[in-house]
Image 1: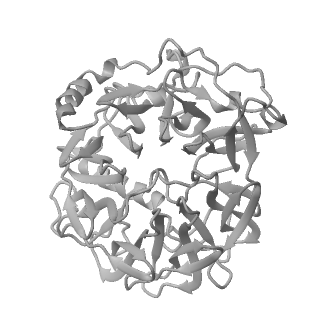
Image 2 (image 1 turned 45 degrees about the vertical axis):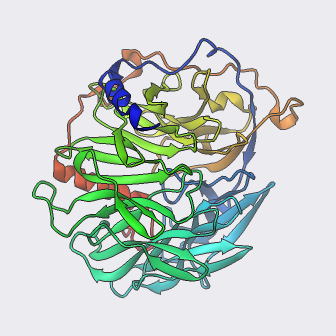
Image 3 (image 1 turned 180 degrees about the vertical axis):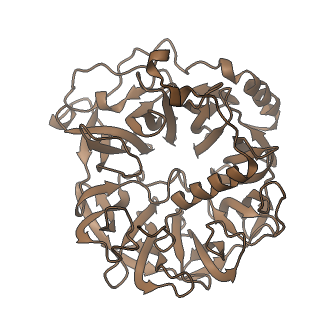
Length: 508
């Protein structure tokens, strides 16, 4: 997408409420099936998705998975500072060719979690170090890199908390650290400045800010270019009267220079990730700070990607072709659908039949989309979509008898392999509890071995919406947040996204 598409995008956003599910006359074609591989755990009940939230590569193109799982041991910080509510110790793991390996943690009895993997199989994340932060009074966390089977503490920027966010294919680690400098506008509400760092070959560097106290990085998507970081930063230390905090703008840091990408009229914005062509996606509030829209930035021009007629949209993943996936609200309600933005147009991908909401979460170089279809609160059915077809419930494309329900999918690599979450049949949906196991779905070849037997079920199609599918909570009119409520919502999202071991709310 280039500058000359800006006008087209604006025109399309005006008629987005009329957008139809993006399917063609080929939508009845039968999709290939998948081999179902349970990645297991490290001795406990659950293996978990990304510790950093959406937009991170946990599955690379070689089929190697990095994440974290429960062990059989109690959390070393129980009962006051458990990593998760079940107070079970968690460790980062690496899975390859049927073998799950506990990556361990820094010396001592500590938690750890992997947040991203690169094409070389390097894994970055976080680990406790057994100490308590004297400033914050909570367990310390450190950014760590697992390389060739060894764990490395990457240090901090002067404080006692750090988190490894992702590692690019050049081996540069991007992360977050506090610097122990007091900050009344701290993005996590902890009273100290949080900065984005770049680590390479043993050297950690604060990449700076747009003029204010804090800056946080975005996600990795399919792999960020070398010497490129995007994210969000305060532009000053002067609070806006409407929000009570300084302006937050998306930034691009490239080869040592930080650029303010601007905004869509509001005072809060964040860049999510960039592709190899330098195109950037993110989100910004509009004027008044009561609506959030996804944006696409290219060659100095920020374009509002619009919605499906409702208040808000979000961009989660971009590939090198400039395709973008995420979700967008429909008119007049709290319903949101997975969407694909391609060649200047927004396409409604629909939902799995029977579900009112959906969200696109991953995208590969072939334009295949994965995500979750939901009741608008909790994911119920993982889906896959590709051009020329309808949204398909992945549960209909795996052999029967697994005893699990695929609830959502995070990643799809360029080989078409899918990393998803599976919960026990009969579970009570609760995304916060993160029940179940991570699973890998491998496309079946023509020979179809035992793990790829056709389950003879027909694939689901795009839901035909009717009032019977929706309840009063999902169809209630949208209420625009006040500017201060928007700030609180953004802070909550960041706290849930960046799970530093020491910066979590103590259990009551």
